[in-house]
Image (tube, rainbow, N blue to C red; front, top):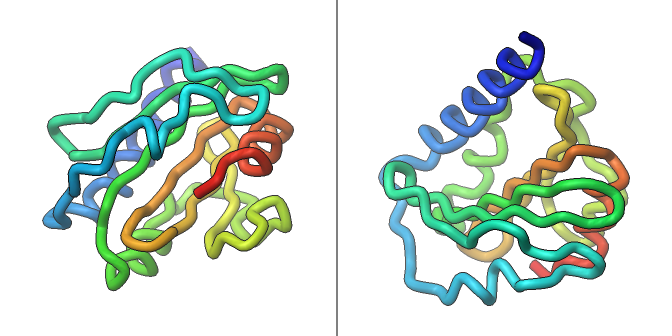
Length: 144
């Protein structure tokens, strides 16, 4: 039962973030540039795939520290701050963490997962990890 509830919360999180991004255009950037086959010790095990309903691209990675799902959407520079402010009301541990490095974004915990959201250029990135260590290790190796 807990898995179902957590899954529903996770789906609600992404639905809320996607609704914040509705109406924003997507661009044809090669997915392998945004979702490399390997990020540090993390290997891409699923995707990259576009979600036709939301225009959010996603990929799944597996590494020694755990699993990571990376979602990316082009929103335009003027929409990034708004998109990053649309966190679920039940999110905890919201704030900056040094693991973000030079990225302007936020860490938060929601639905038993560890998340990071940040903007880079015209793109919003949302990372969901099974462990805090996976979130930090993936971010340390990811180039965007």
